[in-house]
Length: 261
Image (cartoon, rainbow, N blue to C red; front, side, top):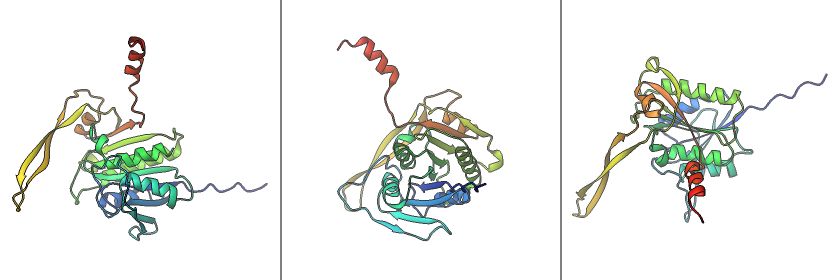
């Protein structure tokens, strides 16, 4: 009887928006490095808040780096979305089985998903038919404890690798900033209706010129107990399935019936 062909290890692309030297991506690599062939392509500097921006009109640079022991890694001069595009087109020999983005320093719950470079990288992968997950820890400190985040990142990756999911799957995963033993578990949630009430502080620079500094306060308008904000406030890891199809199907149906065009 012929021997069965050994199954290739899954290929896992890892990126982020905090930059390739950030503690978050190092912890993400460490949490899953034995689950497949890991390839890192990440920005060479912080790119937080870049959303789905891509680089047009200036050259993109891509260089190999030795930052993760035993792991192929590249730093890119562009945005998180640029990193995914270059990884798929120039670095990988085939499409990866999974794309992971993060672990971000700070939350990407509720409206943050729109602005997030972390989540935009994950969404870009899904557009390329690569199931993806964006991970964020609700702690902005470079000294953040990633113990709980690593545990749940690994658990989610294991679940995705063991089960068949749609190739356009995107998960937005946020982890509360509490000790691992205080995390209550995971909850699959919807995105809360919340936003920042923004204020631009007007200041004067040393040359006497006027400039503005963005500040604001996060306000949650959603009192539902099935939201990501509620889950995180109660020490759950929130898991929100998101999509890049922005069509409002309810409104579409209504307009088709009421607008006589």
